Structure formats: C-alpha cells, structure tokens
Length: 134
Image 1 (cartoon, helix red, strand yellow):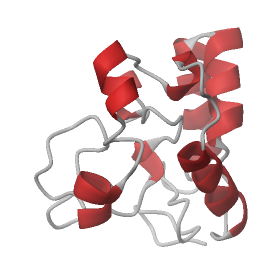
Image 2 (tube, rainbow, N blue to C red):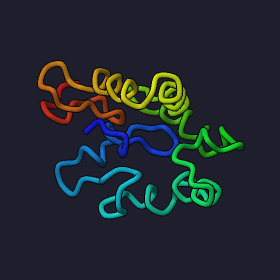
Image 3 (cartoon, rainbow, N blue to C red):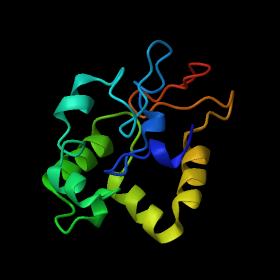
Image 4 (cartoon, rainbow, N blue to C red):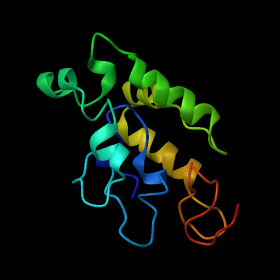
C-alpha cells in the first residue's frame, strides 16, 4: 500500500489514514476518486481544492512559491500534535526531495508496518489495522 499515489500533495501519507485502512468502503486516498472519501477530504480540504496547485500542475505543495501556506501549516500542526502518532507533511516533503520517493516510501513502510503481524499502523489511532495492537 505504500505507493507514490498514496502521498497527498501536502506530503501526508494516505496509507496510514483511518479512512484508507477502513475494512468497509475504504477511501482511495487524496489522489484517488472521491468515492468513499470523507466530506472534508473531497470538498473541504484547501489543499485538494487549491486552484494554484491545480492550475500549475504542482504534484506537491512544496513546488508552489507560496509554500508553506496556511493549509499546509494547519496539517503540520494537527498531525504533529492531535493524534497519538506524529506525521509531518513538511518533513515528508523534505525527505522526498532529498532522498527520493523510493527511499521515502521504504522509510514509511518500515515506520508504519506492525512488527507483530505486518499490518499498517494508523496515524489517527496508533492501532494496527491487522491485529489491533497499540
């Protein structure tokens, strides 16, 4: 599941999202179709709706001269403090630029794979999607 198309424009890894990991009607991630996406992600996220990003064809927010914008900083703050496990969109984008996507994805796989069963650990809950281990 750790693939480049699961990395959101802001740098978050959709592979570790509780909606992507849902057993019933999983979300396909920010870059996927809107089917099964939470309303916020499909119609409320300033990054997904960003006209500048779409008009200029930016794959990632750090390609924009306005980076980091308020929307990216909101994600950075929320994912760094609100959930049991931390994820940094800014750090993720930095690693992608410096080490490349393949190295970043390998890092994500190592960081977010449950050592007990090989399932994916959810950033929102800190619980493994495979065995339920915290």
